[in-house]
Image (cartoon, rainbow, N blue to C red; front, side, top):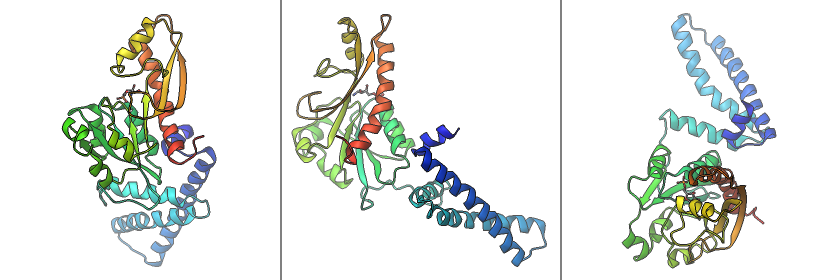
Length: 295
Ligand code: GRF
């Protein structure tokens, strides 16, 4: 249960203790002060008392947890938390706009055209991060699963087409409009145009479902990668996270993580094992990289 909370809120064990302590103390204080206020202004009608008490509690709770969160150093977490509750309750609208940025915010665009399982993991990873935000999903395939994810997550999308992407200005205007800092490729099959690479130097990364420099290059995607690994009787496969340059699957390698290829593997079973590695390592690598903690 505690582990699940830790994963959901992306906090360390110690931080989780502070967060839970804030909830507990803030909650108790809310009840205590709420009852004190009700005693100062007595109401005789039971229903009216209950309704008034609930309203008092709803107003007091955020104030109390925010106050208590300060000495615990968790003010940002709770501001964020309360903001999300307000969005869920429909009290305020989720920011879906293009250029509302906080000064210190790092803004990510995910380029994906498949089911988007990696995109989902990245979105989940940064959900409660006040400094890093997925603000745009760029896709070249109408109906792709990743667009549904974007819709559920209320993240803006840009459906690009060949003409605009490869000629024109490679969608740079839109990326500028969304104030994108980093481009994260997660199953985007088109080659990234030179203009975009020049505009985002060392700010575009990709994940490949094999151990580069082997099993990469044009046409090496999806089941084909795993089928070729199996056909060559490799004992190991894995993932590679790398910078993007003007050749397919070629830029400087940041991380390679291996997994075994088992004797009875099919392309499907190997793909699943590799996917688990991707989901585990890609979000954390992105976080380290964009915050300058990657060496
Ligand atoms: C992943 O296997 C990734 O390595 C490759 O494209 C695939 C995308 O999968 N670049 P998903 O759409 O994130 O499930």
